[in-house]
Image 1 (tube, rainbow, N blue to C red):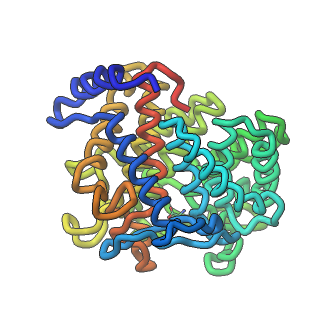
Image 2: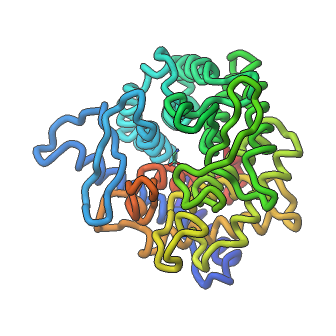
Length: 407
Ligand code: GLY
């Protein structure tokens, strides 16, 4: 790595841009922290005897009262098992440590079956693009590329042309009374757009654009806050209703849903250069930023019961920090570039504090995420996707300050 001196400079630069927060962010130090936690996790996965790892199990969460990872088996219906290999790829990128690369490869491999299995639901992008996608970005392994291309074709089988969006949860059609599309699905469009530009079917891009446009039209309220779920008539494509699944109520802003929207429309602008996405990304970001608590880490829903004592969602803050760093690069300084970058840095400063970092207490990077409050699961926990977007955001900031492309 180009090292400490450069990072001393970066530390000063970040300090200068964050005077208002009276704090500073040393990206190099936080990436070292992540590497330390990654190695602690690998040691934990080897077990007390220091034995061999079961690579079909990946860390998923650590509840607040516990201090070791709960792992989940890689199956077609476990949506989070791409994040841990993704973290390992980012840690390899940060450290150049070949041992971490070897672990990244081994945790990536069990997800290959998804490229030759009918789609269970829309989460294929989270699963395969965080793992194989980052792996291909760093290694250019042609076998990885083929897995991504095949999985993109599989994801496209969920597209309903009459509706114009992907059916996110085939298992829930009856429950919602129609074709359902969830805001999280925006993230999985990235794999379709990538595939369309890297040897896959060019129509994959048409699917992603159709999905993003229809979602933009129907899945947001006039104030640009989002519904978690949009339900459409399967046959006519007509919008039936907007409801929540993981938020507090149908008409409230679920923090991570809005985070997926900010990230998703920023990514859509990157991949298409269509101004409507850049404009929309700012609108959905602004309504989120304007309602944040002082430390820039949202309550799990912006109208959660019990605020200010309601649980936070550090994962939403990590997703948004990563997205806003990217968004800042598409805008002149005075037209949002500086505003979004500073907001992202404030989020990362809070997440890097002892309030949110797990530090010695647990091997995760972060605490205080909320997975599914209405379902009473993963409330105020360490959750693997919070860690994934946290290290991604740190890497993006590192590249930004080095003048390199961040994505
Ligand atoms: N994709 C589900 C979630 O954000 O919790």
